Length: 65
Image (cartoon, rainbow, N blue to C red):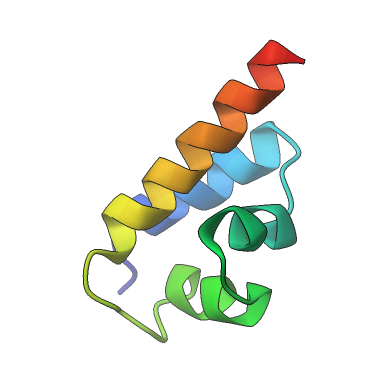
């Protein structure tokens, strides 16, 4: 079963029209890695905090535009 936070992140990406590649670029990694994390195939240390921090930065950038 996937952690709840991954569903929350995917939902936020969808609602705010943010692509996985944008999130990956903000985190400095490949989109494939982000997809694996959000699909529960990888669980790197501190993944939740790092993903949420990058997503928050993207959302703040969008607000400023």
